[in-house]
Amino acid sequence: MNVLLLGSGGCEHAIAWKLTQSSLLSNLYVAPGNAGTDSIATNVDIDIMDFPSIGRFVRKHDINMLIVGPEAPLVEGIIDFFQDSDKFEGLVTIGPRKAGAMLEGSKDFAKAFMVRHDIPTADYATFTNNDIDAAKVFIDEITPPYVIKADGLAAGKGVIITSDRAEAKATLDDILVGNQFGDAGSQVVIEQFMEGIEVSYFVVTDGDAYRILPSAKDYKRAGDGDTGPNTGGMGAVSPVPFVDAEFHTKTLNQIIIPTIKGLKEDEIPFNGFIFIGLMKVGSDPYVIEYNTRLGDPETEVILPRVKSDLLHMFDALGSGMLSEYDLQIDERAATTVILTSGGYPGAYDKGITITGLDKTPDAKEGIVFHAGTKTSRGKVQTNGGRVIACTGLGANLEKALERSYKIADSIDFGKKQYRKDIGQDVIAKEE
Ligand code: AMP
Ligand code: GLY
Image (tube, rainbow, N blue to C red; front, side):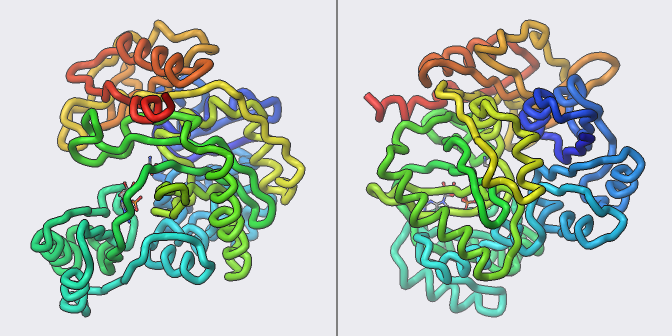
């Protein structure tokens, strides 16, 4: 099978790595990819938002399956583009159509969906720039902290949480009037603050059958102890010790099954991943948000724990046979520590040569996934804020973390930064 995978992050390197282990794979192309995917597949220099160019590549290279990593092309309708054209008959696409991707593309859409289908989530109200005054009155009426979210895609930066009423109102002005997030901020969702601990669930579904991948916890803040600005994610662990049988059953019955049933009732076809960000409040799960793709860096701990063939799973998904697929999970723990460029998530330099990549860990102990890297004149250089994901595997989280940090110490580039406390909170809770 010839496969084209879109994306260039650590998530896509992990997907590519897993696909190359499949006996079903003939050729793997990654657009645009990074230095990591370059070493195991063929990178293709195509803009992932340029659907006609992707289409030409698909035809020229006899691509049988298109896998979409990031959210932006999904929300723009890349799946509709391929599914609705008779030029691409037989092409298997992995990812939801635009209608399903709206669960990620609009917070208001996702909230209304959850209310409609009785899925537990924080209470909320939505405002457009025509009702900014009403939004400010709403702020006066509710108790802090105030959670304000730009409606559309904002690369993880569209959520502002503050206990300061004046700052909350200024945030509304910035988003609704100042267009801080462009079109993504033409509406805001204001919601009740939930006190709890976060965990992410990953479900793959064809709209009927579903499989639940290992749960994971990511670390979004830049600094140790969950301090500093939000980032795309500084590390992740899987499994998550506080996800016990009771919590899992509640998540399945109150959230996962109603979500899939809700999509069906709303006549929204779905063929891909639903990544559910959950808050465990007391012992109950509440949805923080939906994404309609895999997570980064969560994928770098989830896929190393999947023992069964990923391409086989995608093939089953594409042919409506997911119910027959036997998903097998490795009992071992996986952790990842992200090495970032100095300054991230603010301004940072690119083009710095990375050393130590030749000392790859034993595959049983760890895997180095590339994120913001590129190959330049035979050398691997930094090319983004998040540079390398150091994934460790072990009998428990402590052992996996030891291996992640061993890799983190052995790879270097100028102004390398990373969090030193990945996983410590959940390990402390376990004791
Ligand atoms: P989101 O992009 O909606 O996942 O929000 C980003 C982050 O903001 C989440 O990972 C949470 O840490 C936090 N957050 C979002 N909504 C809430 C809420 N209602 N209560 C508490 N924290 C929240
Ligand atoms: N790590 C969070 C995300 O991928 O959205």
